[in-house]
Image 1 (cartoon, helix red, strand yellow):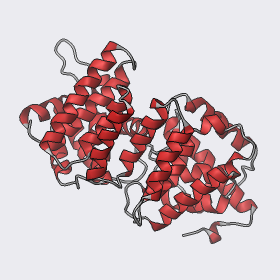
Image 2 (cartoon, rainbow, N blue to C red; image 1 turned 45 degrees about the horizontal axis):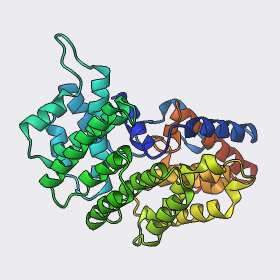
Image 3 (cartoon, rainbow, N blue to C red; image 1 turned 120 degrees about the vertical axis):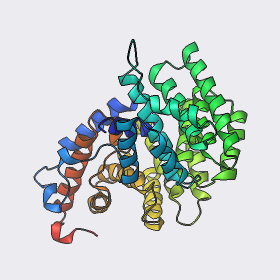
Length: 372
């Protein structure tokens, strides 16, 4: 099961470019150096750093149990059953498709096969062979190809293009098996980024998603990455897309937090501006995300993702009590942005947690006044 934390990190890394990593870590070090470190997060009942779960942003015990069964037995049937019982248009099914595809891809990387040895991820190949009409298996296979392209080849090369074209065809096959399912089209968003779809091609794909799941946040995050990468990191286009999503967000939708993700995507471009984390653009995005969190269902599967990103911005803006409030809700799981962009997500999360607690106590807070 230890490979799952890598899988979940890679799942969310797709939303942000790798060059951000070095700058993020440097920023963390600058924040750490400027604040007291005498407060002890353990006094607040927070989980010790070595026990933080780096695999997922929040709990999904059913997924963990099924992955354990599949990887131990190399029998796909538990995965097939879990996906069949998961709402097709929901965020959970999309995350589980990514998880199963990532598990198969990482198994293959660890055991590529050879003389007398079966390659890793054989259960996915058996799944497709034995149940070719199963929509869940088809979606996992398409996502597997996308992850293989990004993981094993270099964008722009013939190898990368060939795998991506195969993934594009697999998305089409998966869509035919489940006409109302948005997931094959969401997977194709990564293909659109890899094959540099034209704006017209992308918008045609995006309309298919909006027809099926207009408030799907995972799809919006993937689309945001397309706009950031395809159009050379244009802040204007990315912000416009994120703000439009927030404006049309239905009541209780976390899409109202999209501008905060757009700000995060372009952080390296503006990180040197003095007082940036107290600026109007960040303040507005943070307030939108806080509103979204307050209005969201407690069981919304994307809620933890927004809370983790809020912790990053609230600590940077020295809004200690609000940061501690978010920590209370997510502590224990750290498999989300921004922590998954670094080589040690638990350590980076723990730095921000310690800073939040220290700032909270320096301004009169204590475990007795801990928000609930």
